[in-house]
Amino acid sequence: MHISPAVTLDQYAVSLQSGFLPTIPPLQLLQDPYYWPWEDIVLDLPNHIKSRTIRQAVDALPVLSTSRLRDEPEWRRAYSLLAFLTHAYIWGGEQPEEILPPAISCPFLEVSNHLELPPCATYAALNLWNFSLKDRAADITDPDNLYINSSFTGTKDEEWFFMISVALEAKGATLIPLILDAIHAVSTDESQRLCDLLAQFSKGLSELRDLLERMYEKCAPAFFFHQLRPLLAGSKNMASAGLPNGVFYDEGHGHGEWHQHSGGSNAQSSLIQTLDIFLGVEHTATGDMKSNGVTKPAPKTGFLQEMRNYMPGPHRRFLEHLSQISNVRSYALSHKADSPVRDAYNTAVMALGRFRDSHVQMVTRYIILAAKTKHPDMQPKSAQVNLATTTTIQMKDLNEKVAGGLHGTGGTDLIPFLRKTRDTTKAAASYVD
Image 1 (cartoon, rainbow, N blue to C red):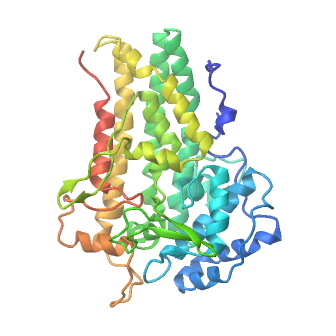
Image 2: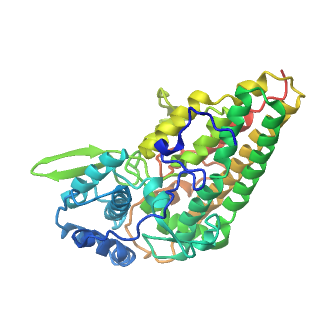
Image 3: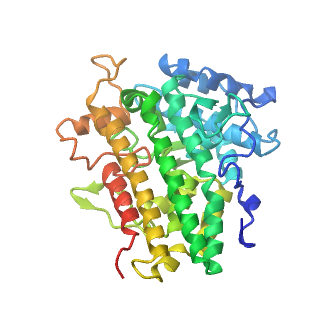
């Protein structure tokens, strides 16, 4: 394989074997007993959420120092623990809680700063740093060989939801050497080699799509919509769900700040954005909600660009570097419309478009259609307010094909955003000069 000398993957915490996943599976436990108060609550988190005792348990925590965290795996484990505690505290009651206590705020802000991440449940906290292998000799791309370290609900459905993403990351790792080799092939004008690499890349995207669609096997839409999705919600654009100002991170002694963050979202996957950058797909969709029928003025950067702020710093810098050296689209467009290079490129773009087709279909099934189902444990006169209850209210008078105005966990106008992203992907293909 020919990797450009300009790309040194180690500095970006990227591996040819595991991609954006850590090369060694994440810690399942912080060994220092000092941090076991966090571990103990998270271990019993499903019961705390179900019995509505999570806020009581967190309020009784001491404010722990981060000074005893020794290496990156420990910082990552701490980040994941505090992310679960934060979202459980905010969304784990009848009404959302807008003040996060110092026992969580103080260490979470420090850990997040160290890892160059926002203090919320990001894709890294929920997926990249939250899995283990049942058999280390077995295939990490098989979700049946993976299990979750921390969980909101303790269910197989939740575990499957997160482990599909982990398996996708592992499977996607095989595309990274193809991407780097293809960039090198362009720089040396090896058109036939580029065609071969793009064909392998297209096949890899098809395998990713097949893996994504395994979600249907063990994660029920009604479970995801009513029980898991509300806990993944962020604090940005969540006024209708009960957080008009976001969340106040109380640091004690009258200090603190209001924060508004997106929730966990697959848009925070560095792998998915890597695929776009490689093919030269540029997304400008903001995902903004309309106010009184008028879309807010577009910000300077789109939603997907903003989501890079929710990625670990090294991964974010990898994407920035990849953007600077990506050359495949311009090279393909320099060839005639019916040339092998152009055909190979277009095939790859449409394969990525089909992957996004599957994602849109999945969101429709797990959110739009699931909104019409009833929460299995909801009391008839429950006053619970969260992303599920507000979405259900919004959907009451909507046809399932009229899906604008529904928030995603990241705070976007969900379906229009996903459709535009899908359409932008396919539009990158060029069949005429």
